[in-house]
Image 1: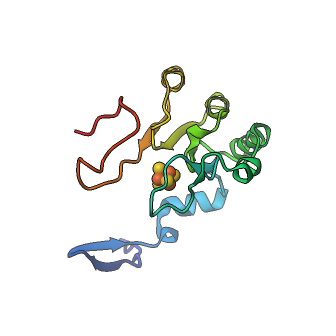
Image 2: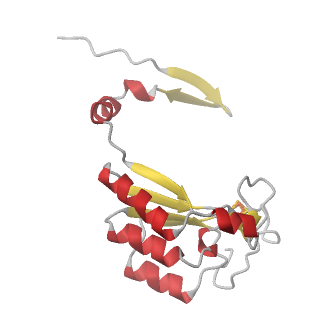
Amino acid sequence: MAAAPTLHQEIRIVNGFQVTSIPLSELDVWKKLESRRRLLSFDFEITARCNNNCRHCYINLPATEKNAINEELPLVKIQEIVDEAVSLGALWCLISGGEPLLRDDFPDIYQYMKKKGLLVSVFTNASLLTQDHIHLFKQYPPRDIEVTVYGVTKKNLRTGNPQIRIL
Ligand code: SF4
């Protein structure tokens, strides 16, 4: 019987826990993907602006900053990139920012990706969520929506949206 291939496992202790890691290049699934060189997913930071100003954030230009608005890719360019990604085999897109709901054309961007057959995830702080967005997400369900909630006490876990309650 042939011996099982030896993986180059690395064992580390992180915060008291033993963590075993294996280089991606040694996993069978990687070898399959490498031979086809398929694009599976992509992230789209559709704006560098945010209505929040979290102290750790690297992409939170002011919501009304003209330069930041002018440098955003227009819808038609985003559509071209989505088309290209889908033609390369992409199945999944993560839309983030900044705060993606700041863009007036967010529904068009989102809907375009959904109509291209992509699974779509959205990272948002949810403070700008409207009934129109909710209707859009019901009509074209996202893969998931991740909402950032930062803070360590109920007092500082405040949101601008009364529909979001901290339990
Ligand atoms: S809500 Fe998100 S994008 Fe906005 S400032 Fe905070 S971490 Fe950055």
